[in-house]
Length: 238
Image (tube, rainbow, N blue to C red):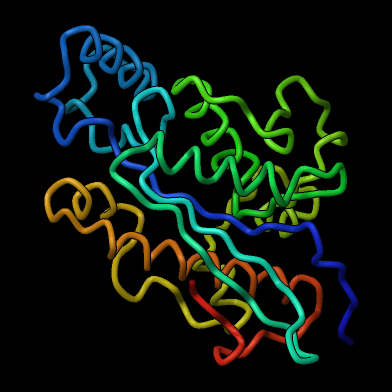
């Protein structure tokens, strides 16, 4: 049975991140020292194998955002449609400013919400941290530091799937698979983003990958709400 759900003021998002430099050797000494400390703590040993810098992109203190893709569901000619838009740039400040403008203009009401897969652990705090690092004011919807969990209205499809099982983790790819949704991972995956960005200068390729993740996120969300998938013909990428 299909459930009704109000998609107004709900923005689906996904981000792609990379290390701040193409290689560990390109870091200045202070950054190297701090990354080494971080990496050793993560490995719980002072003798961690390698420098692990290829993983730096997942930490806001050592990484940067190269793409934020967003999507929303709206009615057009009596049918539900999805519109997808991306903010992608080698200039992180530029894309963060553009994304902030979108939030401040269209998602500034107190009933506005964001949705991402593992967004509460990754996407939402990562964006907020990078904005502060770059000296940008946080949009109201991202200014959630210090709030209690029940005071934060955002949605997270991974959390929705847990049903209180806090030791559980599931990838968007696997969740899409169990619901019979075509996988978005038909070109690259998250482990390849840094290489594609730094070595291949493939920001356009990364953007398409990020957009596919947002489409899949929306379709997974609809399955969690017992709703029909939105057909490809009703999905617009602008």
